[in-house]
Length: 162
Image (cartoon, rainbow, N blue to C red):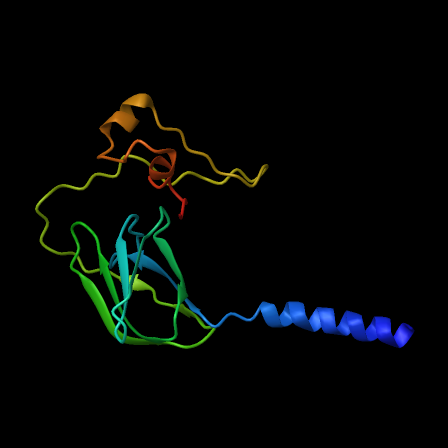
């Protein structure tokens, strides 16, 4: 009976390990300018060059981005931000289960509008391990067509990835 219980336990443990195997890759990185300052809200487009499938995300307030669940293959990474030249990296190979870092340094381009940073990235409250941000009714009214849904509103907050 003890042998049967041990065998059953071993079988269950190996099944949970096997289900944790992930074949898809993850691309992460940081977007910065030539001085090393982070660029928040940069658009990151990742295109599978073999299938044409696109995955898009935006860098957070710390300039960091993550694109999970990418099938293995060759990819093109395109990063755009206002006031900066477009960054393109072609033939980036992602292998099964890999986590690849692609830090991007954007070059300053011809600007047609002025960019003003009016807020800092909210700090994490170390006592509670949480972060918060509040939008006033006026700020919500001034948002461009956010669909007036709570999910769309949450996407405008620092550190929120949907």
